[in-house]
Length: 330
Image (cartoon, rainbow, N blue to C red):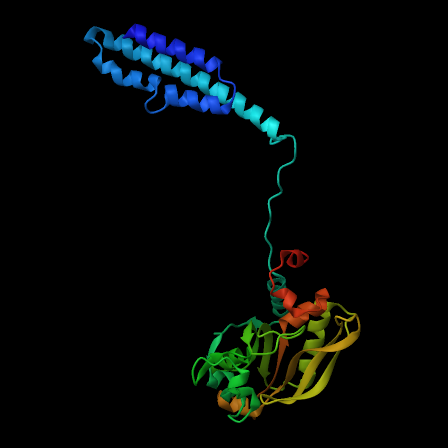
């Protein structure tokens, strides 16, 4: 048996020297090192040796297997490298590695963070609320009657007769006033939903930042000076903006806030970014705040439109297409 093991080892080494390619190497592996290969089978024959030869047979079989396996692996590495050189797959280890991709916040998230930081310096707290609301918080408490066009089912995403996706973050203002008495000074960021026709400045889902101040002696001068400070802090001193008289059921008097921007045609035009005004006494009455003692102002800005003006984005749809070539610019 010992002579047979030595013979198998010599034949294996001899045959390995004749191998010239990976195909021949695989045939060698099957013949000698496969599950039924000659070298593998030696180990199963040790138990058949005479008792006095078993130790020597086991040692010899293991040595033969080790030598043949090491020679096989060495030749395999050499032939594999040669094959890569022939096919042009050789890796140049001196080339620099791939730079890891580092993530960053979406431009809308960046804008929200910057806005909250500005208002926190002005003494505003931050409040959040649910995106699925009831009609009380979304309409009734905000002095929007049943017959108002804003409550048309075609202009809202209703879930059932009394539940809908909120159309404004003013709902958070109502929740704050229900649970907190004046003085109140809060901002409320969040997503809102309206079935608008999608175009360069409209989307069926967008973000708002609303602010509410309620206290004794609050006037529209306080509101305008706050908006002026915020706009200049966010855009810079050169920005042009204006207040334009308007109407909202929950504020009286009311105004629109417009910013001068460059449209898709490269022309300057005024873009509405939000509404504002003095809180209507009916809203205070709905949340049990004394409208004879307290006054307040509120505004709501579209965050996408603020980002568009600041970063020169002329189409709101670019913010939601998830095109990394666009998003990496910010």
